[in-house]
Image (cartoon, rainbow, N blue to C red; front, side, top):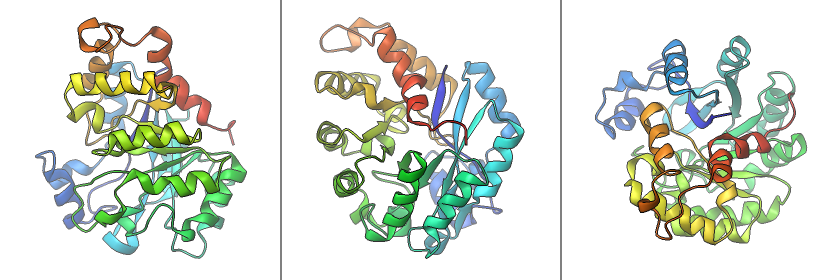
Length: 288
């Protein structure tokens, strides 16, 4: 089972204003319209790359950036393609009904994870305003995918980029599994340090795994292996910012090319299977 654990939904202008889309897509030299995810096209790309499923993400940065992909929008796509997409809802911790929204999208919309974007909302991921939503997620047994690391969004709050801010939330919610997006790029070493200290912290390879050199990715995976946290790393593309097929091909090299790894041992079949989907499945609750 191959799962892309970081895949965005949404449409230009309908969900993403022009200013937001322009800044985000300029980072990969594409026009703002390219921020739209065409579901038929995405499914075709998944089929071509033999990707079975994807975590499809809602997004809420409406309060600060005017960008919002509604939970209902994602839920409807998941309803139409239940074997292909696993939906994640999104909330703004500053909204007084954040906890109730999590309960709603879990039990009424049948979404199976929570995606938050603290820096986009000019909040720390450990701000107490999130704790109602975290409590609701912990109660439901769903994972929380947190944007960690840098972003091309010019109005995001840089002081909240660092993955070290995840430590308090991980400590305060020990039964809640957090996925740190992008390996905390560029603070990858700190991301791994945190995973060593907190067994409920995971990380995904989106952005980092594609935009860094393959040698850098291999070295990072070897470090994670040596420090005992490789089994908590997930593969994800950050579509539409990351490609599906060629990124998956790169991951194939990481289990076959002995020259890439400092110790000469590429990813074992078990390690590769975990990264490419098994770990993602373990994080999900039973069908809600």
